[in-house]
Amino acid sequence: MGLLLITRFTLLEAIRRRLFLTVLILSLLIIAAFTALLSKLISVSTPQDGLSPRLFLLGVGVVVTVLVIWMLYLLCSALTIVFTANMISGEVDAGTFAVIVPKPLRRAEIVLGKWLGYALIICLYTALMFFAFLAVIYWQTGYWPTQAPYALALLELVMLALLGITTLCSTLVPTIVTGAIALMLFIGAPTASIVQFIVRFVRPDALQSVQNITTLINLIIPTDALWHGASFYLLPPITDFAVLGLGSQSFDTPFTSQQQIAPALLIWVILYCIALPVLAALRFQRRDL
Amino acid sequence: MAQKDREPAIEVENLRKVYHNLVAVDDVSFVMYRGEAFGFLGPNGAGKSTVVKMLTGLVLPTSGTARLLGQPVSNLEMRRRIGYLPELPNFHRWLRAKEFLEFHGRLYGMRGMELEKRIREVLALVGLEGREKQKLGTFSKGMMQRIGLAQAILNRPDLVLLDELVSGLDPVGQRDMRDLLRQLKSEGMSIFLNSHQLADVEALCDRVAIINEGRILKVGAPRLLFDESPVFEVRVNPISKELLHRLGAIALAVRQDDDESDRLYVEVQHDEQAADIAEIVHACGARLYGLAPHDRSLEQLFLRTIDASRQRVPAESRQS
Image (cartoon, rainbow over all chains, first blue to last red; front, side, top):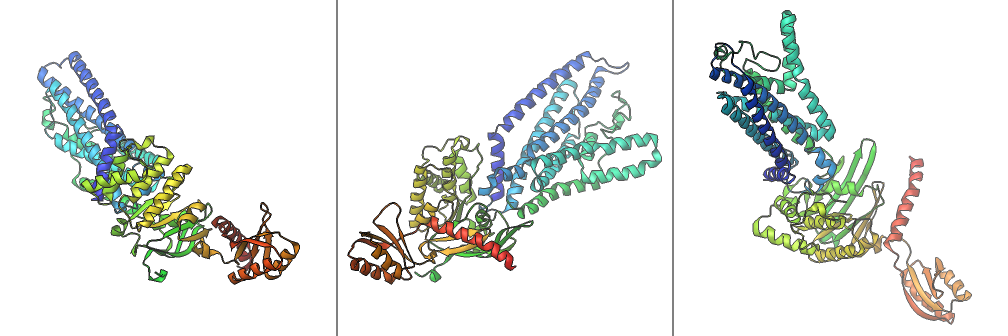
């Protein structure tokens, strides 16, 4: 019961402090700007020789989908870190926990209740923005990724992974340190993919050792791997690439992937998203306030 | 009812808290009984708030035990029956007063009409009626103390722990809070009062513990904490040298009041010597206008106790 009370309180705080309203207004502006820009792009683009306008538009839709959802991935990740870095440490520093902790609820309920509240807010926002962008792209180009729900699911796991990191760090270190840790892990994660991509061309024999390091990094911070997995589900089947005027390796880049995420990594991520908040709750049980 | 027959509200045994190399609370033990008001006094940094935080579960003890209403600090059912107001409380400022109390009431397990009714009652009790829709961010420091007290008594607790209740309140507010505490005590609530305001503790508390440098120095009723000789206030006229000489012969000390020329303070070994004082006054031909025990203030006791403990520390260090 205490957990749900804290969750409800967290949701109420997001609404009352105008967090939701501010982000909503800015998001609508972003979508409006994107719509205008996409419309302009389409109006100035001309199909390649031999490609029908409809197929050309679908091809544009594929490229724009990947790029804009990548932007959404960055946006939602940044918002997750910024809004949740002070989840526990902020309240401890402000002293607002001093009258809540002695109440008849377990400390774990406080941590998990706040985690759940933020998870609902972040996942709802990610989903709304995801479908809003896809709707605009579909309207303008006719392209809709048939496996969009899988892409969204992986994006949600990105946010939950980052939320787990900020939740755990927030019980251990001050807000500013939590933010620094989460940001550096998030920004540092793609390094492995970039290096791996380069090594593939310049030193293929060294690829295995680089992949081992990439795997280790993905275990520590799985956000980049999840994004790569999500990008796969935004694409049409490879067999349709040529029809759409796209090269067969167009999306085999350091920032996108034409391969599914490994099932073992997916299981690890799910456990990661569960374990970090649980560890945070356990840590908070013993913390002096 | 003798104290030994009364149920304990708080039982603390060998409580200790060490932060790295700093001993904040050192082997503290005391018992507070149901229905009493218990004062906790000490200078800044004495460990008072650390003890209170260990009683409320905000801080985990290094060693020792604490029980509230017969239960360990972690017991959730016990927590439904206690209230707590921290020193200089800070609350979520975006909440309105009624929302704040609704949230805390729900944490206590209160619901519906019972909660609504109780919120109206406590807001009236603390002098904040009509402020239900006002945001806490617009509250003054005194109002924050009041709303803090409101959430502490919202659940009609059996035991309420108050850390510097009147901090930030003006004299009228302090008087209102004292009156409220007297009312709550008369209704059977046990009150643990951590305070610098010696006048409040002296006026309200049945028993007092004095703490310094993490250790309890004295525990007892304010009057019984005096392990010093009784002092009588004697109003007599005239005060002759013979009178002073004869009183000096039977008393431990005789002191004349600086401001009132007909007042003496006579320190004796036993209360029964009051009769001897009266006899001497009459024998010296003076008129006796008043003879009564002199109530020294808690402040004087407190300051003497703290000073004595500080002087003992160097001696104890030498011994170790």
